[in-house]
Every structure is written in C-alpha cells, then in structure tokens.
Image (cartoon, rainbow, N blue to C red):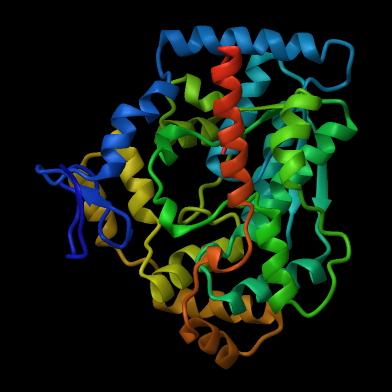
Amino acid sequence: MRTLTTKAQICSRCVMDTSDPEITFDADGVCNHCIEFDTVTLQNWFPNEEGAARWAATVEQIKAAGRDQEYDCILGLSGGVDSSYLAIKIHEWGLRPLVVHVDAGWNSELAVANIEALVKHCNYDLHTHVVDWEDMRDLHLAYLRAGIANQDVPQDHIFFASLYHFATKNGIRYILSGGNLATEGIFPKAWHGSAMDAINLKAIQRKYGERKLHSYKTISFFEYYIWYPFVKKMRTVRPLNYMPYDKTKALEELQRTVGYKPYARKHGESQFTKVFQNYYLPEKFGYDKRRPHLSSLIVSGQMTRDEAMAKLAEPLYDADELEIDIAYFCKKLRITRSQFDELLKAPVHRHNEFPTWEGRYRLLKGMQSMLARITGRRIRIYS
C-alpha cells in the first residue's frame, strides 16, 4: 500500500522524487508515476506492429477527410526535435500539411534555421503567426507576478489556440502533434495546471496585467471540449505514439536528412523556456524538469537509471551563459535585474488560487459518465 510521504525520497526505478508534493511510493520504493505508466499509460502507447497498423489506418482517414482540400492536416512546428521529426515523417507518409509556426517573440536563431531547413526539405507551405509582443510581454509579467510554476502557459496556449483557429479557417479536421509518451510519459500534475485553461489565464492577466490584450486569441472551455471535437469533428492525433520513437535516433535522422542542428539543452529553441525551465523553476520551486523527462526515458526503455542520475549530476547552467541569458530575458521584458530577482524571491502561489475551469471539467466528466450509463457507449473527453 502506497502512502504520501514528506521525507526526501527518490524512486527506486526512475528519478522522480519528493519535489513532486503528491508523489507516493510502494513497499519497494517505486513511485506512483512508474506504476501509472505500467498500468494506464502503456494502454495508449503502441511502439509495435499494432501501432503501425493503427497509424496506417489513421493516415488513410486523414487523406480521405482532406481529399478535396489543399491541406489534409495541420502541424505545429516549434523547431524542437519532436515536432521536427514528425515533420519529416509526415512527408514520408504522403500527407499534405499546413505547417504553422507560432512566433511568440523568443525564438533562438538556431530554431529559425532548423525550421527553414525542414520546410525547404519537405517543400511545405509554412504560415508563421507572429504574436503581438505587447500582449505576450504583459502576460509574461502577469504570470511572473502571480508567482505560479507554469510560466510557459502564455506561450503554450497561443500555440495550440493558433493551431485550432488555423485548422477551422482552412477546413482541416486533423491536427498532428509531436507530443508523445516515449519522452513525456511521466509528468507530475502537481507542478502545473492546464495550459488550455483560458479562465485561469484571463484571471491571472486581469489581476496582474497592465493592459487589455490586443490580439491574443484564447480557446474557451466550450470550444475546446465541445465545439471543436464534437461539432467541427476535429481530432488531435499524436503519431509518435504509434511507432518506436527514440529521441536520440530521431535527432540523428534529422541531422542526416536536413542538416538539423541540436540545441545545447532541452527546449533550447525558446529563449524564454530555456531560462524558465533551467533556472526559474529549480530556483523558485525546486522543480527540475529533467526529472520527469529522464524518468520518461527510463520507463520507455531509452535510458538506464544510472545514466539518468549521471545526467542530473550535470549543472543546469554554465554560470557565464546564465548571466547572459538572464540579461537578455530582462531586456526583452523591459525589467531590471533587481526586479527579476524580486520576482524570483516573491511568495509562491498555486495556479488554482485563481479561477480555473476545473469545476466545469468535473461537471462535464460527470455528464460523460451518465451518458455512458444511459447509452452504453463510451464518449471520450480529453483532459
């Protein structure tokens, strides 16, 4: 029987530890994340022949749905390894994607070069949506003042919102995502709220923002859970879950085929995310996002626990590089270094201290269960 513990402890199988306040361990010291991966997550991961057959059938469905249109699917391309690898696979499958890149103001030069190389190699149409910088700046500062952990919501929300809006505008039913269980199968829910929760985003911006948002588009609860999936019949699919996705081999293939240049660290394609994940989170909250990432690689068989421990022993940042990146971060947001330090030391808050759509989601799930009992049919609602 697993019990909640406050004593510092690390999982005996992966490298998740008690920096996750909700982690639990069984009698053998194995954490709830590993147990959930084995009992729940594996049911949705098909890195085998079954996955290949399932995905082949889905490809035919995508082609059929977009037969008379210019594009049959939409791909959000960040320049990271996952979405970049998916871009070249889509080309091999003969799909016709509209490729959308959302420029939220933090692209590294290397990310821009990688995206250009991919688009040229695959001969894709690329639409770049440049987010109004004053909107992004105000949201970033509002989230920093709020003192919550999920500082990447302003970028993540506009990224997915843009994909849905472009899909609707172009009559596209399928959104292809590079999200995958092989590298993201473990993540502590206590560390963050939903990036799609527009109620939470707007509440934080109203309290801590300094201006009305000019053109930043959000997705409402109704749109996300009802309008897009049930009325517009749109689906977000994750092809990498239907193949034996190995991130190291994917990077090697990208380098070989398109001259892709790797980043020094995870999420190096975004100057904001680089500072946020590798400095702000560990410094302010004690959250090291390498832990869930490396743990995902362990449970998916891409890394041993000893290799992961060795990775964790490496410094998150070179001291000189950190100072350069913080200086750029402050200059971009038009704050002083002392203001940055004050924000870092300010009291910590949870996202659910502000209004959320979590109550609506629980109500919707309750209605789902009731309809399933009445009709005998399972209606899937994605969280």
